Image (tube, rainbow, N blue to C red; front, top):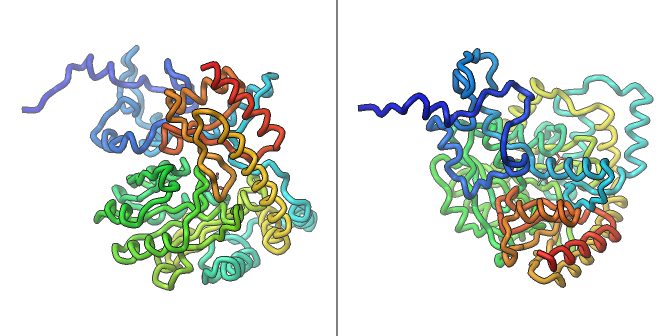
Length: 459
Ligand SMILES: Cc1ncc(COP(=O)(O)O)c(C=O)c1O
């Protein structure tokens, strides 16, 4: 016998239909809605697959009327699975408050505060003046792909030919392409937590399932190869690595990468190695690319890099993927039907960055290291905050478990009461932490940390 639910009960659980672009009616603030921890909701997609319609406007009637909603007016299920970026939401809120005249100090940005180096800007401007304003090959101009291939050989000991490289509109776009071409409906992708918040969303957009491997402060936020192995199933398609890591700044050693590579080879899955922060390393740490370990692992590795973080070029939207030929070709094909080429004159700027940007990178790295030392020293002295010392990137991940507030409550109250914007750890899969970006001036670091210290005394 099949159990039928009462029609009124069914309606009560349904979200009223909302035409595209209209606000989501809710008693909760938008930031709360955005924060869905993947490790705490492992069956989130499962529930949806079972037909839970609380979030999906699949209903043919609304709770307030019996209007028939034509099929054509509904959003695709694919997008219903996605939550907007919490970091971007917080940054937008902080900017809005600033514009309204509120004295906000924001540590939420995921980008260097430096301007793009002059030599890079000049090169793009020159190319514009010379009329370099037309379509380029979808995967990027050959000069740029060759320069990336040479950079990878020189700096990373990676041997990818130019035709194994696709230049995309940011590393984010490159990762999106890769997941779209590799992941089938129901495939599993292992993600190390705390993770960059777009990884699980992009896996979901590809129809895949994120399998979260939680790492701890006490282990340096690094995974064990044996723990990865335990998560591998017949459906495992890929493992995403991100070293140096956003949000923790942890850096993987060559030994750890070798152990992980061994698992990938034995169990046979791809490694998507996001190395976007490779140039921002501290304490003399060295960056290793997993694909450089041996030819067999290179055949399973997609290396991601880009201009955004190293050369302060976030707005230019330039990143790349380097992959086994079949994967690169598939990504190029996908890109040719989605965005086509990355912006022509921006590519000219990136080419110049690769040719002559290193001294600028060094300069910015040194400044970041000084700020890292400053912020780590100050936060270490604030009672109840336990900062993790980052070896790379420009984020300080702080354990707040001694303060009995969930990370989102903590961040919202901090913004409301002390006018300081930080990102709640829940966005990265850890509800007992917050992330502070130190891509900001020393003065703002000092002022902001003083506000946090004073605020903590009051709560
Ligand atoms: C780990 C990680 N990967 C990729 C990206 C995307 O960088 P891009 O600006 O090149 O798209 C970011 C940006 O915040 C990031 O933190």
